Length: 239
Image (tube, rainbow, N blue to C red; front, side, top):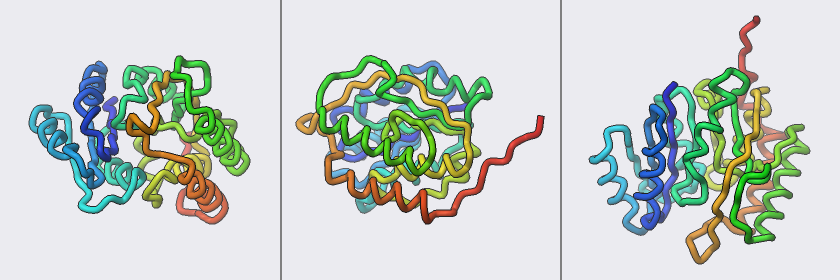
């Protein structure tokens, strides 16, 4: 199967070359779709250079900053692979985890896989309140989806192409995480979690999401679980 790696980018000039190097080092057939969300630094010029250098990289640019969700939506719409994985452009998530993430899909057990930072993988120890906010949002999401996820806010969400085609994403910013979660639950997708490592950065290192983003995330949980009916259950082949 071919893997589509969607990389939303906003002001990541310090890490872009390294994250692409790490993605390319993973021995899987893949395409890399990078979406620059109107960065103010040199991210776009770096992406253009990378696209000229690597035949499997395609790059797209938003003229106006819209948010991570919009960048993910643009990237997924260009998908040509069989499985999609979302990869942040910083170095918090390790592409070496791809083999673990796609395993349940490759062997036919799952339609969607979440990479959980809270299932025992090695991780940097810091930002207690950020951790608690993640756990709270995951708890509230689980109440409405009736899932037992440990890390709804994880970047590493891996989905079969058929799932991606049904998502119909609407959220532009960080509310995209609860939106995806609500919609794959409504699809009755087979969802797995696997442990991943996590090397979180702090705000001095460029981390963007903060406590103010928790309010739109809560609204997204309510909106896409209670009032959104834009997805249908995945068809199942009778055995």
